[in-house]
Image (cartoon, rainbow, N blue to C red; front, side):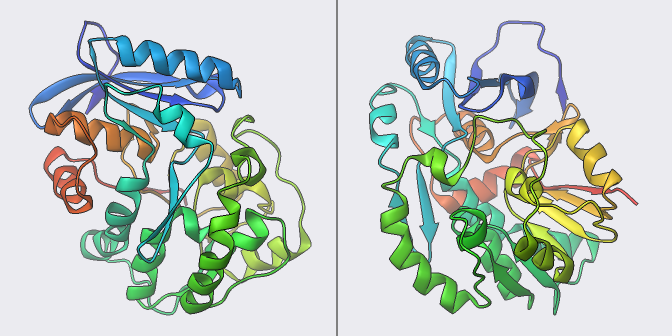
Length: 312
């Protein structure tokens, strides 16, 4: 589907606060239109991030922009909690569609589990799922719950460093509605260290290790997946977002049996939801974010479906 860019095309760009070591650029056909699609990291430099956003807003070839390494908002059961840090950034991009992936996550990721059941025969009933941060992946959480899985929510441990788990969707929603409004006032880096790249070594956490051991499936953002991941993950499944060939090698070495990325693998790697959301907006020819249901329809039409890789 993707190949190295060799000509001038309309552009879709993800500007990430994260590492430039993960930058990538391809050509991509979307609904009979071709785009130059790229991810550009800023190595934690917020001033560079702002400069690039301004440049992209002024570039007539740019069709849509994604924001990586930061979220616009967190979504839980119809409640959206917007990060305080995002408002100044949005003002830098007044003339282009500018999205963070949140509009795509809930609707599209909710469809991932039914897609895996229908097309790959996967049975999630009674599976123990460790969802590292449910507020970051609420759509995926709903998909697991509706498929009959036992979802264990790790928001307090993985995002806030508190040694507590939530064992039901009800307790997660109740806690999220209390913690969410306060969490979005914090600097985003306190919740998610986007400065470091994905090769940062895992840190040992006894409570986290117990949760990995009891789970059949580890789900959530890849940085959270590896944050406290034990060396021995024999037979586990991982459902995550952005991965590179190096990430796949690491998961294979740890014994992971199955890797699913909620976004497709293009030219050897998967891209973040912010870039895929921007791609779908560009394919639609829209000048703003789309309805959640439309994202799902377009993803099927453009062939941007989850990627499944058996590592064992």
